[in-house]
Image (cartoon, rainbow, N blue to C red; front, side):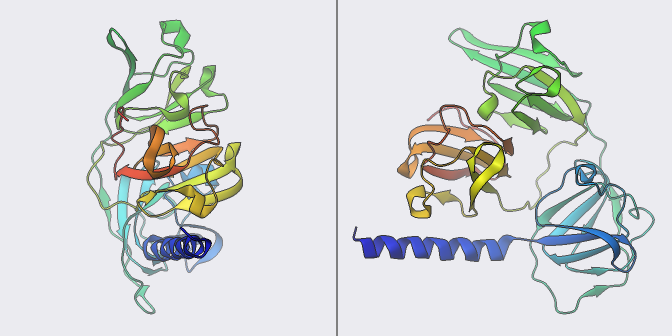
Length: 317
């Protein structure tokens, strides 16, 4: 391929990515007081726990600029929840006022001109969450060994399962798995209900498992379009690249081949490969933050693609 064609290909890829971002990205702003007054927080991403942003139980008015959003009175999108369409909510009713703890986009809707919502959003009670339960799995030549947890374990060595888990099934609760005892270390990832066939940077490196929240079973809802961010250095530092479409066949076109040192996955199951066109060694990662990559992927990723809109995992190459 000529240099001119390569340049055109790169430009077209960038244009497509920008169009996809504009079409899919939603935005919501929460305000501390009625009438859009006081402190505020704006996000285009899901916020499972507003306490971490310093804005828990504070919102009294809302502006939805684009997208369809769900806001809930408890962390991790449960409790009393309301669906908000684009518009200005100058006041919210007592069910939600000063009680919103999580927010996420669940659909897409064009922004109507000058939309002002005078009636408060209606909150609906969601089903109670399942009791916390996780099963950690270890695949060996002789079969699969598993251990079931219903409470947090600060040191998995105490039950003979430290640095052994390579997959997990979460039946209830939100669990934080870490590479050090006591819920610390350089890599910690939170997992909600679902089956995770790979643990990414935590594969055979899990030393603690703690319950950090409740979560109802996963349901089929129109979710935010899955996307992934690649960062040049560990701990999400340096240049970054957002993959908004379903695949990036050759990161050379984005000048990011073999450059990623950390990853954030926002929705879906993504396969990352060391060769272009999904060749070489491949690993599948689900939603979460990966501040440091293992030797299989660290500064080796050359292509990536969305495997599923939900995290199902893939053990085979």
